[in-house]
Image (cartoon, rainbow, N blue to C red):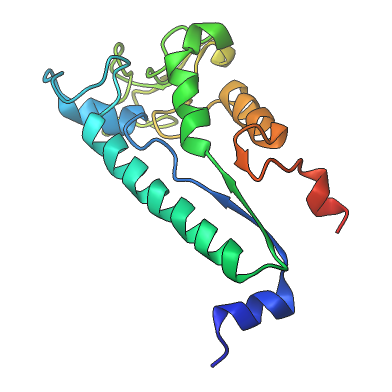
Length: 172
């Protein structure tokens, strides 16, 4: 059986490795804490979930560094999606989001508008009037407005190592 290095040498030279998102952010996760706020950071995100995600992402970045050192012909870009998505929450008002953890479409009202028994599109759920004012569509997925910000940050290469613009991959 061929090694991963053989496959990379044969089939690919350019790779994008993205971090895992900040898993303590979606309403589907944060609503499980109930009224106990001791496990939330100042922005309402689950500390333990995000700590575990950061540890995973640190390992992923280390793996990227090892692979890059072993595969000198390859370009392996690491993108810090965690920082991009966490920034959406921390600086939500800068992006025009009213309540960054509240779902636009759901059931239950503030603070999350998320009810696993009444998911978006199902009986008892209701969509907000202006999705552009929300980062979360349904407590699991981002709105188009939030996704546009995430995409622009990824494409900027400001959150990537090495900081290569995406057109680099198109011109190879």
